[in-house]
Image (cartoon, rainbow, N blue to C red; front, side):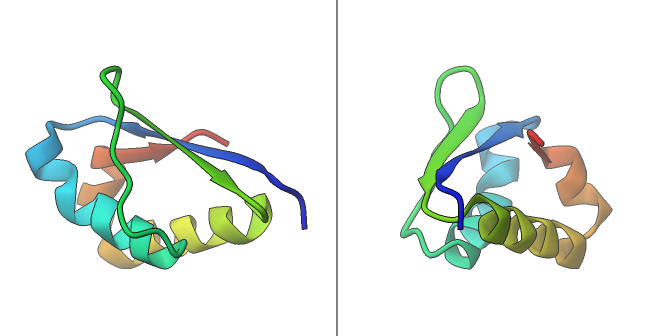
Amino acid sequence: MTDGIVVLDVLAPASEADDALRMVAEAIGRPRIVPDARGKVTVWTDDVERDRARIDDVLDRIGDFERQVLRPHW
């Protein structure tokens, strides 16, 4: 386990990204994740590799559209 941060870029208006953000938050055990004013989501985690894998799984499961809405920074 390696602690650190996970960063996502939100590439679409918040209303289009809401479902994807909700599913990512659930996958990594957060009640909610919210982008900052620049459209970045930064989450502190105690296991970067685990949460990156969970986020990738969510994005793969929900398809190509969500890959255009959220982009992981890794």
